[in-house]
Length: 267
Length: 267
Image 1 (cartoon, rainbow over the protein chains, first blue to last red):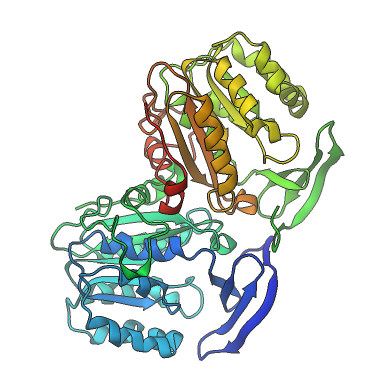
Image 2 (spheres, helix red, strand yellow):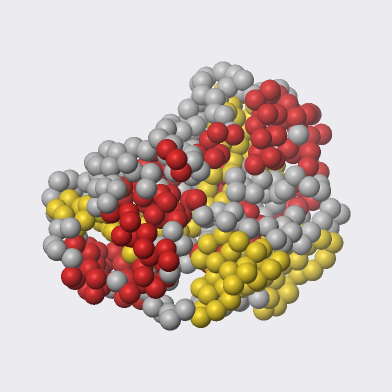
């Protein structure tokens, strides 16, 4: 995916190497980034920096609606998104055990659901859906396509929100334009693109990663101005390292070259 | 400076290789980033992405004051900052020729000035000073130290502004804290830290680069809310690729971990 450039981390020790039903998996200890998770040769996560991505993909949607109770996480096998979801005290406790089952083998359990699982849930089940996918090449490709977004829209309540990993404005504008086009056809509420920076994802998105935030028709959602702020709430998960309400709103300010290509729609 | 990691670009052709009085210089054509400028082994600039850094380091200060006329650029030998300064029609035409002399050998001419040059200019000469430095190791080290900031403050008019390259919040927080401490002692007006993302600087700042913006005592400067917007002004330099007023304000919103360590001071 990145002809003409290479990024290397020094491996101190390989902790796990194997093949799941879906992907090649490597976990290694790096000399400066802590433990690193690699799927199909692509770095997904390092200990040194997972906060910005995990916090932003979770709190951008959940802080944009009042009292999120039922939240579906698709992907996110590393568990970081679930850790962040759990900061929202409104999310029903009953919900967690059923998702936490996935932690026995999170990659498999969280992966086999996808579109088939979504089609089976009753219409209007969720307040929010978070799609923590990898790139639109390989097993996650369908998570960037219109039929998937239609299933998500169906599974959301009126005025429900989805936040989906949406690549880098520096590198993948053609992919982003496709996501925006698909979402514009499917979601009848607000549609906004947000972005954040990453230290680790620098290694595969050149430092920035974006999110597509969409709402279904219903009570208006103003993604840029969070109605459900998390500032100051600490809980038992420790302090937020990256997210705050200022950063939330700032995430929707796009550079000129991206603003021209990514239309925003507000209720 | 980056133990345990490496970043590589494929070199198609070396266009220039030599030693100036101050640094080793390489210019090469890369296969995917266009021409690349390397000083002392560190990538400074690629054609594919220079807009975000050049536009932000220039327009953050110049859009924060009304009618900037006299602007001093320190460093910036690649000429990108001068291109951006020239978008501001208020900047006096007489000024440009004398700076443009530097283009005959920009690295040398722009370098020999520094503190000595600043000490010789009459007090209160400039509306704005832009310090487009490289890292605080090697020849640019003094540009991060208190005596230099004192010379800058002296050369600025009351309510004048300085914008200086101020490293990456992901990697160099200890350097940033030092810059903030120095500036807080020297500048009696607003002091704010802003940041932006970079595709190329990803290679040495992991995707983000920051700026320290300070004002001298005098007419109040509110860096977060530009009084001299550039939106829609195109001129003969082509459209702005990155900068707009939204991005200007958003640049001052810091992640929680950085907000704790970098105090802001507003007039």
